[in-house]
Length: 234
Image (cartoon, rainbow, N blue to C red):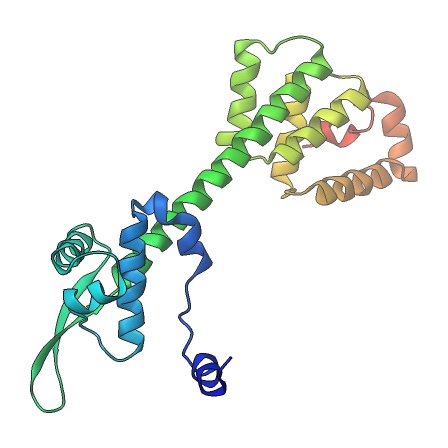
């Protein structure tokens, strides 16, 4: 390869194209030809020409000058490109293109994708939670039970992990019913328990209290919940 040609090639400025744009341009409603046109406009802007004409754009693309003019108009109407005006230092008004609307649209799309992904994950976790309850109860949940489970999630804002932990405690205690599980969750919420670690620490703390010498006689005469004797405390 010719030395001068190689030197010219290696010193050329590189056009930076966000990978996210390449991944999601079709979701934005962009055609391949429109994407290429926008990239060429960006290239012109980075070269110092903020207002490339349809003729200049046509020289780089396989489209005619008229087709390039139509495409630029479509990109502006579709909200991917904006034609702005400003005054230069000599007091001359000039026009220039900006791709800011494209980046705004891309950010909005990505936010929507993230929200949808989070919603799907939440639905998946809740579905597994319902399945776990049905497995432990060895039957489908009744409408009232399903409604109660939904209230724990939506109204009381208990996490699926904490509800699962309360279910596990009910199983271990031999009191597998929704009233007992609700009592566990109520006590955890009243005592500021929000994580499994906090629930475990809370239970250990209360069990130590219950096994203190002062409580031995009281416990001998009082019925308690196995593993959750603290549930009866006010």
